[in-house]
Length: 110
Image (cartoon, rainbow, N blue to C red):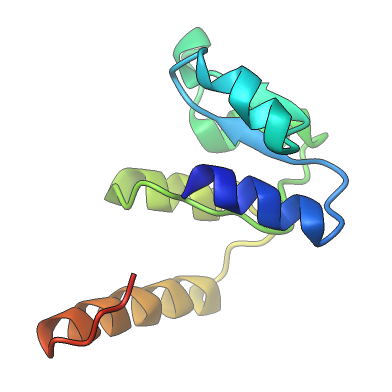
């Protein structure tokens, strides 16, 4: 899923694509797919969102894709964007609930 997110961002013309992983071995493969910068959160005591904002000059990113589904990382992903508002959280909540409902009723939703 991560490589598809990188590839999709590249194909849509993203000029800066930041990959984040604790596994340094994933850097090379990410760069082959179009990742321009890599952050290993294990190298710092700061949160992932703080590290992303450092790389972006304090602004944050326009779009963020969290590909693990781990709740604390979903929060960090949202906090790494340029603007966090109640509307953004509401939208995230709607997406998660929609996904749960679709799976519950037997609709295959990736």
